Structures are given as C-alpha cells and as structure tokens.
Length: 110
Image (tube, rainbow, N blue to C red; front, side, top):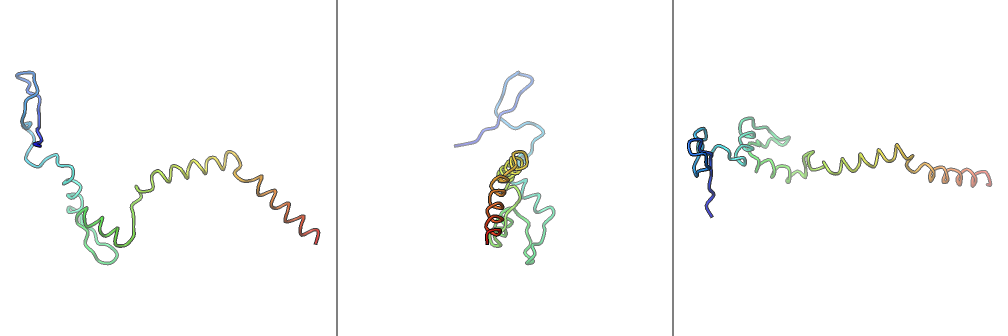
C-alpha cells in the first residue's frame, strides 16, 4: 500500500496528488519530531545513562520500573472525584462515629 499526499491546487481549484511547495522531504514526520526533542537536549539518568531518543527513554523507564505522570491521568481524575465526594457527603463519618461509640462503651464497661 502506497501512501499518497494531496494538496489543493488554486489554479485548477482541485485537490491534486503531490507535495505542497513549502514542504520538504521528511517534514511532518511526527514520530521523528519526538526524537528530535530528545536529541536536541539529551539528559542523563541517575545511573549515568545518556537518554537521547524516545526508545532509550522507554527502555530506561522500564529497566528502573519508572513511569511518567501522564500514565496516571485517569487515576488522578478518579481519586479527585472520590475526594470531592468524601468532602461534600461527609465520607465515612457515620461509620467512624459508630465505631468510636462502640469502643467508648466497651471501655466504660470494663
């Protein structure tokens, strides 16, 4: 399967196959852009590993059992909703009061 690129030709008023005049070979390759970010400013891990590509970053993270904050996006939303519910509805206040009353009653008996 060959990937084709189409551009709008103003003269004919139609889409035609080909590159736009402002594009060069390799531009628009999103997968390469992320590696450019790493290679433009490589960083060094705590163990001295130079990380200058996305592949090396993934391997480093896996080796050291690390993750990035974006892996927790949905979890943080869920925990936020749980906290909001706890603070607006009182959480487990009634259950805690019942347990405290049982403990106080048991201590007062004996």
